[in-house]
Image 1 (cartoon, rainbow, N blue to C red):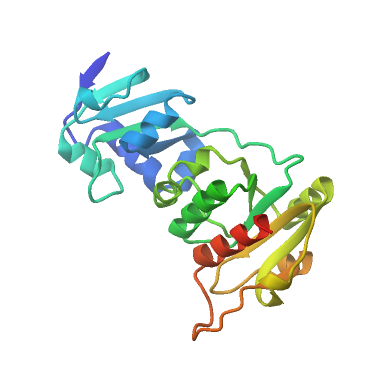
Image 2: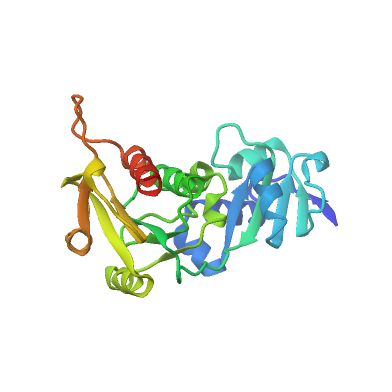
Length: 248
């Protein structure tokens, strides 16, 4: 059944805005907000849609069913959306269960990556390059932040990932028999690293580098930069390292 919703003060609108803006609110309700024709269309195949808001019925993907469907005006979409040019379709879905990292041989960990755009780009890159799973250490932002979701382009829902402590990461290394590396400016040049078997690659915020605990866990590796630059953004450096480690 489809209903009209026209007020930006409606409780559903306020609820969806809070889902977009607030991590704790998402956790308390167990749901998150997604938007865009492609993302909603892809996720509706595998995830139950609690609420759907669209500018026009023609935007509803084939086969999509939701508990509640609302036809809304542009001002409602603009109120909820986190983008300047929303596509006119917004959905609320249950937060997916995290996938298992057991037995995976190519795992990338993010240590203190606090910028959601960087995190989303790294997730997208990891999926594209063939990394199997992701571990999020303390200080890394919420992958369900709306900016992170947009940058990830769906990778958040296709890669198994989990959040945990450095001790839990150490246990994963032991259980999966991984050789851990950490990106660090004091490390061995990337081209000199030779490895076989499973890999854990730790990438940290370029502003402060890896935490002491992460640095102590792994062999340090760096990207030689003959040009006049001291460092790269973590998403750029991460892309180079993720490609290099899986293409030797």
